[in-house]
Amino acid sequence: MGKDLKTRSFRKSLGEANRGILYSLRTQKHLRFHIFSASIVLFMAWWCHLSRPEVVLLILTIGSVIAAEIFNTAIEVVVDLAEPTFHPLAGLAKDVAAGAVLVTAIQSVVIGILIFGPVLMEGIK
Image 1 (spheres, rainbow, N blue to C red):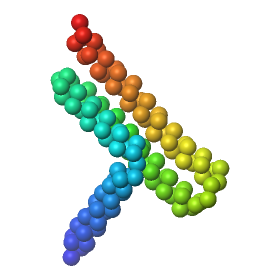
Image 2 (image 1 turned 45 degrees about the vertical axis):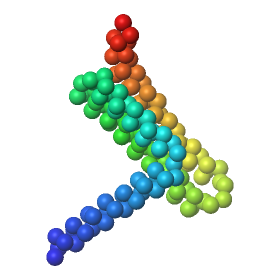
Image 3 (image 1 turned 60 degrees about the horizontal axis):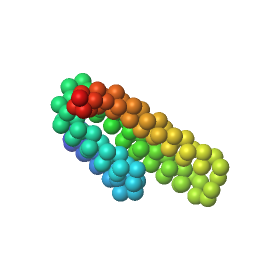
Image 4 (image 1 turned 135 degrees about the horizontal axis):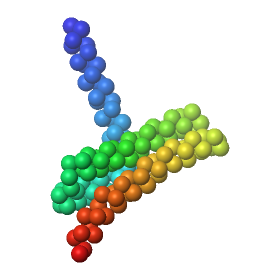
């Protein structure tokens, strides 16, 4: 019986996590943009025959941007719950969370340039 409770609890946790991801996808246009961009990047990685370490680095980079966007969504929801009317500190919390997404997005662009740049330049020659 203990095992069944653990299994159900794990399944419930997975369901709740899935619900959070789906909520973020439904409500956050930037997350949808990141997912779209990630699809293009992964297709390009396949098309350019990137090495396994390069693909792993791209996947980690993509994951960090998507995770940052989902964390940002969670912070926005909690701030809206705690402070439904405008408050400067509530706005600052949202801005800081959005800044974290921007940092990871810039990081991913730089990594993408470092990985794809030489491959694309070789193709141009």
